[in-house]
Image (cartoon, rainbow, N blue to C red; front, side, top):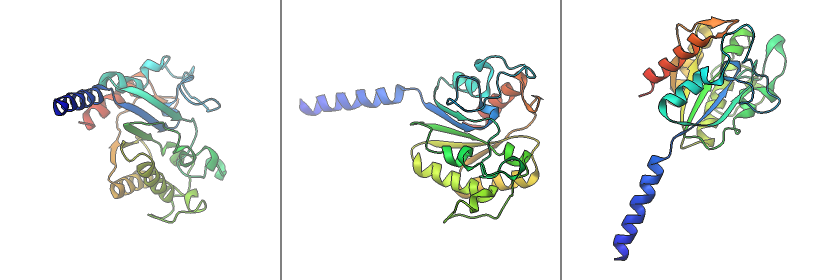
Length: 219
């Protein structure tokens, strides 16, 4: 009798766990922002009077989460930030970089890493590929910083599935670096294309295109 009761309780707990919607966290820049959905003090791009996205429901992440029936855990996105510790005009921006925010994603089942755009636009140093023993000085360059970021994400969130999104229209040096580092860590890289943009950022149509490409790429 006790064995039957145990099996019933075990089955019920498994069913409950399976029926819970997956939780999604985002580590990003302005492409993933929306006022009121990011930590206080961050710099959101959306809404913006030079872009037709006027509702959080029109963002790529909201469209994707709603399409899949998932829940938003954390959206740690900060406009203008780089993956590496070097920002525009060569400034030291480690405190706002993706690396400094890696432990602020809650307890997600899925993590979307959507960065590299500002590293490209600011012409941050590329650096050399490096797979261990990173210093703060090493991580002023893009390649070692991205490797450190993925390594840390995998160790900090061992149960989460990580996807890296690559913006369209970036320098090939950034694209190739993303491919190589993601391959090294076994992280699926989703290379986006045909994103309509206004003021350099996805429009309503661009956001829908990103969502559609994610739905196609993640099976």
